Length: 115
Length: 116
Image 1 (cartoon, rainbow over the protein chains, first blue to last red):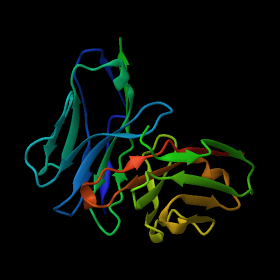
Image 2 (tube, rainbow over the protein chains, first blue to last red):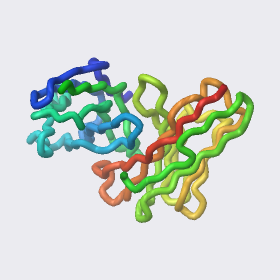
Image 3 (cartoon, rainbow over the protein chains, first blue to last red):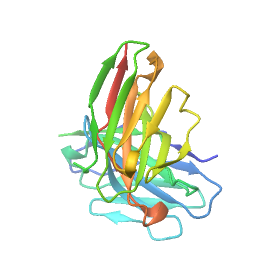
């Protein structure tokens, strides 16, 4: 079975500081993709960053970067220079392929950004 | 705004009533997913369409649920004889399918269903 676990229900960070959100996953597939999605309050879920499992280099998108540890099945998200607009629920998700390429989500981490 | 729209945004209904939700995808996206998100949980997969064909249904989708995607454009999700346990956010997501599992799924704003 494919699973995604986010062990931090809530996190808080001061504006301009750095925060790391944790995610672990389990899959028997060798080729898969991992995603971090952001869901602001009452707004649409949007993609933050994605990582291909076959790539050793960690993905980076502006202030967002990941630490992908394939052997440990760990996929953490680092947000640098946190901004008030980063406050949201963050979901880690796995796409292991199959016939439909559906996403398997974790339970989410609610990030608060303190001014 | 991701370009995926869902209507209505909110629906309050009484137990036993039928409800229908609609999802309008980004025009060139031929793959469409429905997910359900309950409080404190991440979205869970319900069903998947490739064009007009419904190719997978989760075991979460009981026989009270039905989804359609006529002509491979918009999709509807109907829940018959609603139960309080159906209260949740229903999310629609679409993608092109050209890149396989690397494709980004674009999510709509969701329909929040409350069953009284």
